[in-house]
Image 1 (tube, rainbow, N blue to C red):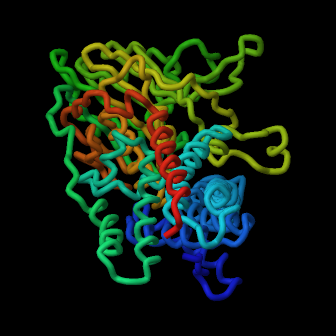
Image 2: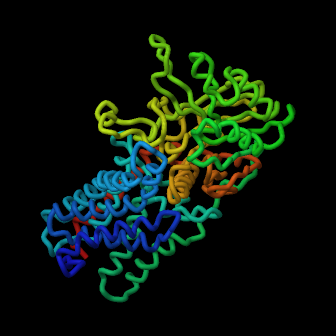
Image 3: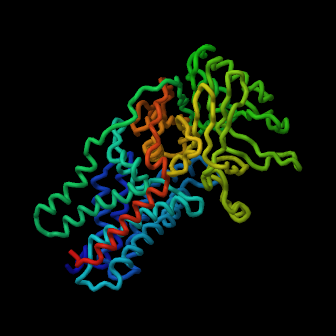
Length: 534
């Protein structure tokens, strides 16, 4: 069948592509309009298949990506409202520029699919099936590259559209067998079913099956796993510390007191309780060895040992604390701080530090300023207040905390990176994900939570999220949210840490599993190319 133009006027094709991109982003939470997202993806596939030239194929994918990322990442503009050095309106410029860059990936994906399955093919031998499977395969590769190139930005993979409500993981449960990026490819295939159904131009059994399949897959009562009770008691704290006061010294003491009060009564020595505070949970420097002038900025003690002892006393001899804080990088030659690390510190009941983890995936312009020597003189600074750039840690580590279990740690943003959250040589019992989502706007926190649920499903591990102002949550190893605290509420969650599952196929094989699925889809596309188009 000869490809038909999707729109009547040539000038409308770019507008339709951009509109499809905007519509596709409504599939992400907080809206969760997955039927609209699938329809928009079907429109993108139709536009790409009928593109007359390689240039228009790329432009179709790029315009789709521009709309897709601009709406889905609108929360980034909120960050500029907390940085006095830059005007708030510049946030929307930043969103558009970032989206324009990220849109290159769907643009190249569409170009490659078009070139491999349509270019050099006679128009009467076009294969929609080959194009669809090639596009889904290359989308998997595109998302992998987006998460990798230039340190990567993996936010909002298409797989996040498949994450169900808090009580059920939905189609996302298949991430344990596919991985997030291959699940994104499956979402593309489901959208393609609607496109193929519409192409048949008549009601038939095949068209009905193609139209019903995506709905059945998205709404199917997929089995739930990870429902067994745990044994390790915990208390997870969300103190509702707003971004406006988080870094203000006059608020440090009251924020600390609020956090301690939400941590409950001190645990007795014969108890075993894990206490989890959010990123930025303690404003003091807890490690020794810094020049005295840095400790004098502390909330309540000019000595780190006294600060840790106070925390341990307030939590009780049966509690071990995991809290976000900051470590300094001190230059021995200059005896001053030349950088910092965003860390989680484990404080034992005697006040000693028994473990720590430094964040590995840092946020560009949030935790460090790229090309500082060039950008700072023209007025660009970090979106988060502070003069020191953060230094990246070595990557996933497991903290052996004795009777409090083995903890994997992912701080804030780095939980979004599929296949990069667990040390495979030393599998933890659970993952903690302390975060500060206060500058993420209204759309960022629920999207962040959805991606944390994907990590729980992939790895078969529970995820404990403690945030400054929401959304904090306890996610079991099957991706179900067992308890949560909404945004802008001060509360604590207590219970038992959900148990881990046996290592999932993804936990055993990692990103190679997702890429293998991509190769399989590409192989199907090559086979389809040998047959006459339909």
